[in-house]
Image (cartoon, rainbow, N blue to C red; front, side, top):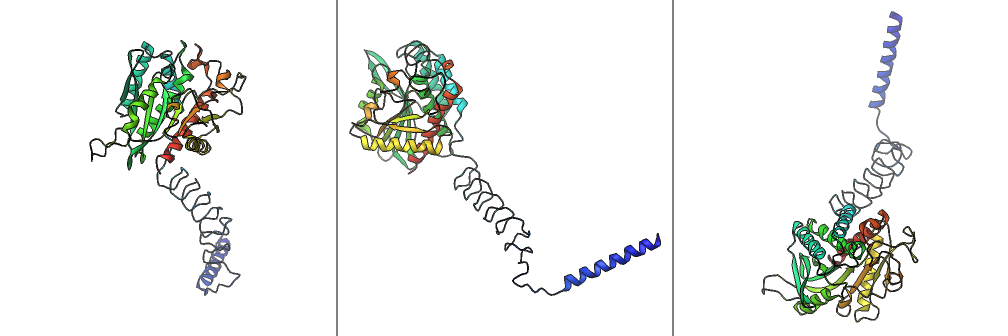
Amino acid sequence: MKRSIAVFVSCLLVGLAAMLTYCSAPSSQSDNDAPPGGDADGDTDGDADGDADGDADSDADGDTDSDADGDTDSDADGDTDADADGDTDTDTSGPLDCLSLEEFKQTIKTLSDFGDRKQGSASYDEADQWLQQRLEQLGYEVERVEYTYNGSPRSSMYVTIVGSTLPDRMYMVSAHLDGRSGGGAADDDASGVSTVLEMARCFAEAPQPPKVSIRFIFWNNEETGLQGSRAYRNQRKDLQGIEDPVGSGNYPEPNWLGIIQFDMVLYDHGLPPQPDQIPEADLDVSYQKDSVQAAASKELAEALVQGAVLYADDYPAQVGDNMYNTDSAPYEDLIPAVSVRENRRDNEIGNGSNPYYHTAQDVYESYSEEDFLFGFNAVQMTTGTLLDLANP
């Protein structure tokens, strides 16, 4: 036992002496020695090699932080800030995180449950009151354009996000609240109303408004000949850009920069329609090729198609050139005007691409989860595009 202890102590002393000799030796680094990091990789992170990129951190991406995304911050999104949303600011959420598929679906169901919302009916009035209350809950002041149809009073409602630096100009986004045919008018056009309402909710909850104003409009009398949108155009086109009162910075009718109308955005099952959504399903963004504003309208349509690439999760969009029979048509010779639909109005919807169109079967229950997701991509596409357009 004593011999074992003696051997152990002797080995310990030898080891300590060797360590002291090493530590007191002068440093003489040559080209073949380890660099200042204490390793052989040419960085300053103290590994040997702790990573595979020769930089100053402990990952393998070739940058100087501690993640693996190839940028110079500490998250994993590929940008140069400290959040994870893929942009270059310092927030912690993406610009479309406010949008909700469940909210989108629930609005369609609520409106469909009111019935077809035929103009002048109790069904329409109940839906109109519900929509006004919902907008007021979001903090909006609801305004109306009033007119008559066949001698009876009618109105369309609208709300506005006032631009922070350019309140005297605005984009309009719209859909028609009225329907027909005795069902729930779920696709035509609760889907469009829900699209506009979801965007209005998102902008209302944003930490700051866009630079340019955005007006969200819900038309009446689309199904009877676009009387609601025509009344707005006729009453308000000459009020554009007028400050009232002078010097107040208040513009009741900002200058119109463009209009985007949503009219049926749920159902692309091909033609003839198949039981399920087709793999090639895409949104249609149409302008009117023979209108005065054709070139500018085409440019707006192309911006939305690009917005589908950038902001929509699942479905692309394509440009069409025959926008008609919807509420953007009265504006086509005045400003850039487009419609967003599930299919082309002339040679697809008009030829039976949606078997529920203008029937009592146009109810919430007729549509699948894929159909609702398809429509929600229209919300994503347009919200992202508007964020770009309204923040020049």
